[in-house]
Image (cartoon, rainbow, N blue to C red; front, side):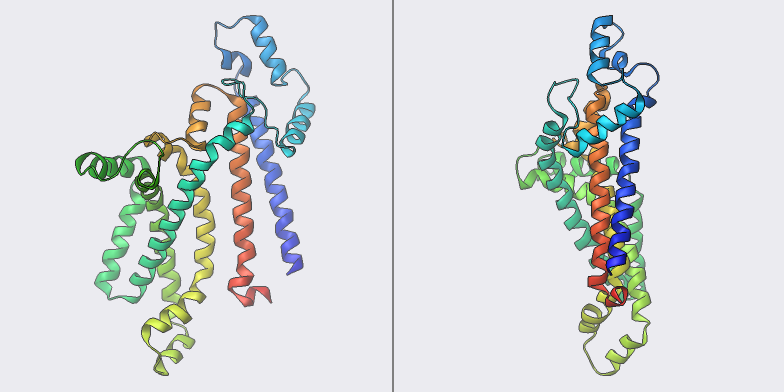
Length: 304
């Protein structure tokens, strides 16, 4: 167990190092001088030189990367070109709404996806076919299209939920549902497949032969043994949900890190883009590390 933990921690550190190199390289992959691009073609040479020095682009690349990574380890992600505020401050001020949206979508996706998958695996064939067809349709719909559809139906036609801003639970419903739909569809298909495999095992047939109620066999015996691959997909889908906030927050005019990233790209605010990419990579790596550490708790065979 200790060796497994150390190995996963080492892999996480290497992954974070690769993410930091990618985030650092972004500003250098832009053709031309990033300072000129950020300020526009009408900028004076003095303004370009000042921003070049502010971004550290006049230093050798190894020195630039060392400065970038050491500052990042101390929580300093640079200064926004647009607002002249620390990038970490801008991200922190936007993170609350994004965390709320991601958590809400994750809860909806897990409850709906696992529940639908269990129902499909334990129901009659026509119910299974109908449920999986619906899940496939949810997986096939682009997020922006399903979001627009929900806005038209529940926001404009029936006027049930507000469609813009972030001011309470009611404003969270439509964005969270939009973000959760593809993840729920994936979880439903994985849960169904895993449940069908477990339900064919001998211990399930033995439990049924002893007269244990079907619902108890499914929930107490089959589901815990089918949940390991589902946990893997949940970890991956959380990363996908964080990435999906870029589209959803823009579509619903909702403040958050995703919308901040879109605005930074449009305004060529490279330090903010770097900071968001680095933070997203860190969150994704940490979530997957937590998921890996949950395996031994869920399945004792992995611990052994």
